[in-house]
Image 1: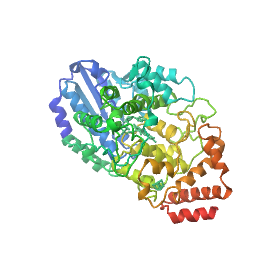
Image 2: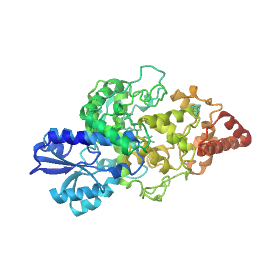
Image 3: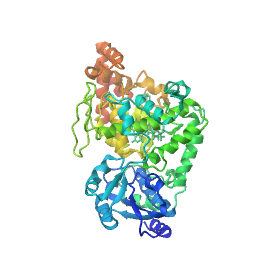
Image 4: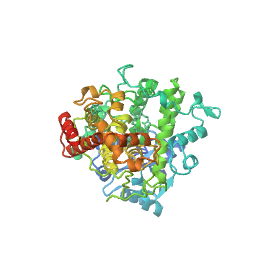
Amino acid sequence: MKAFRAALAERQTDPAGRRWVYAPYDQLGVMGPLAEEDPRTLGLVMVEDPAKAARRPYHRQKLAYVLANGRHFALEQAERGVAVRFEVAREGTAAALRGIAAELGPLRMMEPAERELRAELAPLVESGALRVLPHAGWLSTAEDFAKACPRAPWRMDAFYRQVRTRTGVLMDGSGPLGGRWSFDTENREPWRGSPPAAVPPRFTPDAVTCEVGALLEARYADHPGRLDLEALPATAADAEALWAWARAACLPSFGPFEDAFSHRSRTLFHTRIAPLLNLHRLLPARVVRDAVALDLPLASQEGFVRQILGWREFVRHTHRVTDGFRTLPRHPAVPPDPPRDASDHAVPSFLGADEALPPTFWGDAPSGLACLDDTVRAVWDEGYSHHITRLMVLSNIATLLDVSPRALTDWFWVAYTDAYDWVVEPNVLGMGTFALGELMTTKPYVAGSAYLDRMGDLCGRCAFVPGETCPLTPMYWAFLARHAERLRRNPRVSGPVAGALKRAPEKRAADAATYDYVRDTLARGDVVSPAGVRAARERGE
Ligand SMILES: Cc1cc2nc3c(=O)[nH]c(=O)nc-3n(C[C@H](O)[C@H](O)[C@H](O)COP(=O)(O)OP(=O)(O)OC[C@H]3O[C@@H](n4cnc5c(N)ncnc54)[C@H](O)[C@@H]3O)c2cc1C
Ligand code: SF4
């Protein structure tokens, strides 16, 4: 880290007499003490922890986000006059902080967002070496959640109404601006090429970022995913540039095409700001404030604000109050407290799904399903795909296959550049796979080929024909029939479940045989083919 150390030394100021703050890897924003106190009275402690980076096989682009932004944040704070103590941990973050606190005295720290880090640092908090302050980056409070969601099931729309009412965001007196809380029903257009999709900006990596790249190539060569430093916003100026691009190129069309996906654009009009928001390189309050100040169509403006003020905050509370879903509220449509795996993570599965994740998700073997293969390619290429491909392609197909929700969560956690426990677990367990039953969503997000054909444009490039040879629709019927017992009392899917059970016996047998064929073929790492689907159906009928 020669370039980084030299740049830091150039900017360092006298550390004597400073009030020290420890900023974890995902608190890279001027917030809390760094925003409120004179920089020349402050000291900033940062710890880079190779053991944390090696804990799971994180996508290399994700590691680049964390390391390059961390180092640049240290430089930027030193530039402001903050004294910086930057250490590389030899025996973990906690041991490094214990040594630093012994030397400098107790350190202040805003409460970490990640449960994993909270658990690791709990002994230091207990011993007084770390003093916890509230996290200044969140937009909502525990009281907001308790007020809107006093008992299970918890609903995002009630929470969102509460936060908007309390904060006054997009409000007209005591009611919502435009007379409705959500314009979601307007935001379901497929994208057929117009308006042109937003093209994400590229960045020029400086010596510090290149050094991170070289470190990753050398030390984390066995981690999956392509490293692309020019796609990486690494400095505060890069974060500004990304957000300026998102405001101008994405937000005006954000709403209508929110649910669309396309092989021609991995972005469409999504903003790609999640990795920077989760690292606090962009502050959520600022992003919402800017979005509200823009002259935008209300459906786009409200749709975007809902993602940040609503979903992002909501999922964080669900994670917090359940201790990472280890303790679930009692409700007939919510599973009991789930078992834990070897790493003490919760393994809920409302539907009892427990199949292994097929190797195709690791990009090792194409599946033959164009929508799945295109999305998996995007993920290993960029550590990114937008919400609909996460939900309606990856999670949908995994759920139809009865893949273990925990296995899918662990995959998302390493595959995406914006994944941290507080956000990835609720999204995959709660929303993507229905592993928490009706705790956070009203129904499983599952669909056959008609939906994917309507909202995307991959079917024309697929070996399968939607509604004819595509196996996803029979797998959808087979899913409903297999889980009828659990789903028939759910008012939003009881109709389709009844429909699945009413199908002629030979069709139901063909559905089940198609499911068996696709599950077994993908488990072997083989390609699903129209001939294979046809043969499976004939065997079933
Ligand atoms: C199965 C699954 C897994 C997901 N895993 C993650 C994850 O690990 N990390 C993550 O940040 N988001 C996750 N999401 C939520 C969402 O898909 C991403 O935040 C979004 O796609 C990020 O891309 P973007 O910045 O272009 O988002 P945009 O579409 O531009 O949305 C703007 C912002 O809204 C916020 N947002 C929107 N929806 C959610 C949500 N459901 N939860 C939290 N924030 C939301 C994000 O901060 C996002 O940057 C997941 C969703 C699903 C269905
Ligand atoms: S035909 Fe089926 S598998 Fe192929 S892209 Fe369309 S929905 Fe996906």
